[in-house]
Amino acid sequence: MRAISAAVGALLEAWQEVRVHRTRVLLSLVGVAVAVCSLTTVVALGAIVQQANQELSERQSGRPAALSVSAYRTDGGTLDPDAMDAAWDDVVERYDISYATRVVQTQQSVPFRDGIVQVPTQAVDQPFGEMHRVRMAEGEWFTEQDVQQLAPRLIVNEIFYDRMGRPPLDSHPMVALGGQGLPDAASGIPSGGVRAVVVGVTPSATWELEPSMYMLSGQLQAMQAAAAGERGDAAAAQSDPYGGGPVIPSYEMWVPPEIADQLTEVVKRDLRAALGTGVEVTADRRDWATYGDDPFLVTKLVVIGIAVLVLLLGALGLVNIALVTVTQRVREIGIRRSFGATASRVFFAVMLESVVATVVAGAAGVTVSILVVQSPLVRDAIGQGMVTDFPPFPVDAAIIGLVAATVVGAIAGLLPALVAVRVKVIDAIRY
Image (cartoon, rainbow, N blue to C red; front, side, top):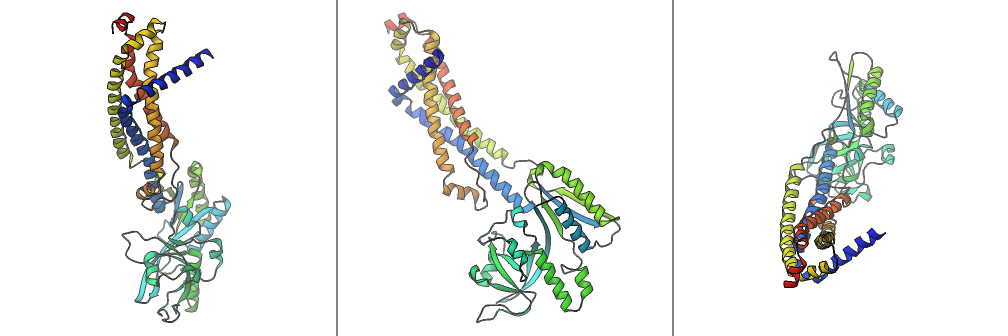
């Protein structure tokens, strides 16, 4: 209890001295506060940049752990798409995998007002949107209700949407897939082919120049099978449900990273068993966590190094001010020693003045950093519209800032404290 009282008394005394000499240390503390703010901001923004990089990777290759599964016949023959689909569905159900999708790259003929365009199309299952962090500019991603609809549902990019004339989505705008007719001038509803409803719009990247769209793989399969049946080509409908030749979709699943390796082996084993001899199954991870590298590590280290240099310059200025302050307080220190103050008491009193001052400056710097990083303008500038799950302000960044300020204060107060300890009572009287 006595030690606690002494520590609290020393801190209060140090704070009082800082208030007395605040004019002398203000400029040096401003430098410390700016340096701590820079250091904390760099660490915090680094977390946002890393999140943006991760989300961009996840849109390309899926979230950790994303398993990509494929199969082929070793004898050069063609794998039966129906058998592969059935084996896939069985594996997904057996291991209760909530996030699994087929992915088919195809094209669909879409009539616009200025002509018919072959639109690149990704046919996927409903979980694909969550697995790949698909961003929506308008509307929403496919729902379970969309899966049950007979008319295909589409999610188009903004270029596609612009060529449609940007009709409101709540009016259930329709397009014709595979038809040769043009949209009716009066109603705007296209004729010919299979009518599909647009339910969402994804933002187009700056490099995208052509329309593209998503649709559900089950609806694409049903649409192609119906078209083959109308032509009297029942065999083609069975052997080629996706159109354009017997194409086997790629298959993806999103599973917990801790069981990814184990699940990879059992999925390959079960698919091989279901598909029979002569079939090879591959499954591997392609998400960013597989590599574990941070491409922004070098940049962050350089900027942190600069912030640390600024912090050290602020500490140097604080040392100079503290030395001048101690020189001017020789008489005060000598009087304390004459009344029984020990060398250790004088040492810690002088050092704590510096530590308390820098901690206050550090707290101010951390506060400013939080306000800057949490600002919507800064987040928009850093995220560039690519971040959907902004991380909260990292606690470790604030801790690093306060620890750095404390260390700087201790270093800056060490030399003046040693000078104060060497003051003799007789020198103080002469002073």
